[in-house]
Image 1 (tube, rainbow, N blue to C red):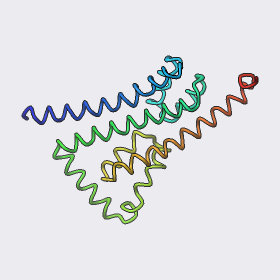
Image 2 (cartoon, one colour; image 1 turned 90 degrees about the vertical axis):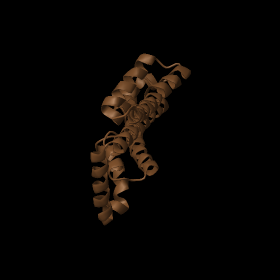
Image 3 (cartoon, helix red, strand yellow; image 1 turned 60 degrees about the vertical axis):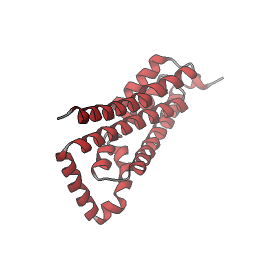
Image 4 (cartoon, rainbow, N blue to C red; image 1 turned 180 degrees about the vertical axis):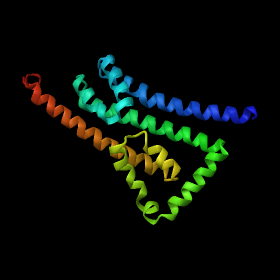
Length: 183
């Protein structure tokens, strides 16, 4: 293997990592600094989001972070992971003949299914609700679905789940600790 493909691969993987860091770490921390939020709570939210995805919404609320910030951070982190995964998969698909052949076969099978080729991409919304954002990019990538539409649907499902959990967590905390919300 010559150095040109290695450099190209490393360059693409570095780009995916940089995009991931921007959305997962830099944007949430900069927003927290601008809002004067405690960084320990912010890092706890980031770590929780990486582990339990939208299930981290109640964690952020319980840590005293504003609901709008929690929603922003969760969405930013999800977008960063999704974009990074697509970048990693694109790099693998470009440099591996076995992966290229696998993708070709998977795309042909998906296109031969009338329902999957027409409505399959919309299945990303329930998949993200049930399995989370780590599962959706591989599915969309293997089946060759439109990248922008896939990302939009993944984030739509993720935002629905995140918003529902933020509202539920804020409501439950207001019931459990009514003195916090009273003037």
